[in-house]
Image (cartoon, rainbow, N blue to C red; front, side):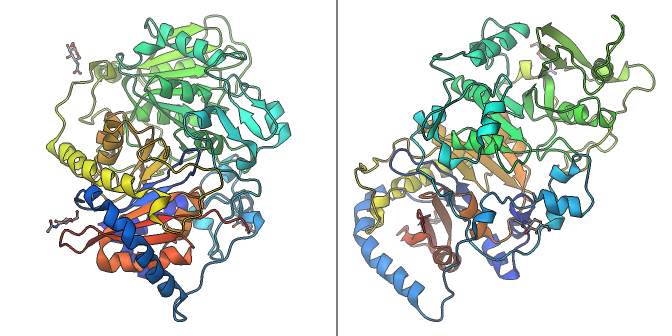
Length: 579
Ligand SMILES: *[C@@H]1O[C@H](CO)[C@@H](O)[C@H](O)[C@H]1NC(C)=O
Ligand SMILES: *[C@@H]1O[C@H](CO)[C@@H](O)[C@H](O)[C@H]1NC(C)=O
Ligand SMILES: *[C@@H]1O[C@H](CO)[C@@H](O)[C@H](O)[C@H]1NC(C)=O
């Protein structure tokens, strides 16, 4: 159960864990990748299978204990029998993402774009080392400033890539001395994104883009999001826009979006399905996203159809002003282009076309499929809600028999299952505990940077959060309730009950995922310097985790919740290693 997902978490983040890790797999992990505001930034992982009592009252005492615990931790770590600290990797691994190694893929014979796909089977057992932060790395600015201004040393982008960035969603940046500025909101420079968003709203019949939510558009999948400006705008409208883009060693769209504190993950339209259930998104958006939709027998478009909810929208902005894929030869006026043919075949209707933008709407009526012409693309036979996880693309229409076939325009005020409520209750309490612990002050010797004010929790210290075992998204909901400016990547482990649809239906970001290999190394890789990890489990497991945490050089301390149970929290902070 738990162990199986944990074991399989390798898929995105790396290869398989050694057996000894299976014990840890019993732990449910909530991983919060957190961006701490001006004074610190970081990530935060936590493991919380059960209720955590409120420890605010214990806070003072905890602080007093901190010094003692730290000494204890130190001696544990210094004991000669313990394993040594893990070394830093060489600079060449700075951009390493497990399962993505284009040269290895080429050697293995992948071509036609598949070399850029995810190939975990080619991952080799690498040396165990900690990925360095870039040489010029600086702690990001506090949200929301950090959304519009980032440190150029934090992202891998070449001047050429910067200058050649041509598309509408990419154009909006200015390189200042050591900063990249995105003036998407203040209108200082050409602000195409707002107009563009309004145009899309009007094309689907709304008065303005403020009406997206009312119209049922809550979850948007933005394919190839450029520098994330469209998503940033949607997020400001309280629409959850998740950027997916292919792996790129430099100029990574995913890296840029995450650096700005915007939801993003690697996702390919190449040969596999995306790690989302069918009927997940209200809108899929592609602005010059570089996908040739009429290729591969339309399977890429069928994948969009699969993840679209009934009544959902596909927005395609194509510089040629034609919804062509690769075949750009002009057709006769009333002849259908291949993509128009396809869209009719899968019961999408072209709602509107303006300038370079086309909007289709997926049918909300399953009868449409039965009334299609002979020889149309078939419905998939196997259509129960299996946990989709990077399966090969299919050439049939998915999701039509799923119970969740509810048009987005009809989205019920919905009675939420009781489990969701309970999950939220538990997480409300847990969040209070975590938040109160996410202060460097608790580490008596925490090196405060000169000039820094102490962070005042709860303040906008955290932005990017990953909940590694999200259940019903209760932690996400608790964050929102507490009005924290965070977004949460809700990870539902493959093998756990498939709660992802329920998470997405709440308008949250979520993904199916599998176990990581070398979990602590992998957490360390995706954590920002000064990011946090919180694990919650039984004492024995926590003791073990503490050893591993010290090996990856995190500051770590165990918190006893003092309620008579053997449940413990392990709160860790990744240091900013500069050497
Ligand atoms: C103490 O807290 C843990 C973790 O939240 C919980 O599972 C346990 O039931 C509590 N124990 C008591 C005695 O209240
Ligand atoms: C990528 O694959 C190549 C060829 O197999 C190998 O030499 C290189 O070390 C790999 N890179 C990483 C980061 O694993
Ligand atoms: C959507 O709502 C309309 C009117 O409120 C209703 O007639 C229709 O049955 C609903 N459709 C579904 C699939 O729930």
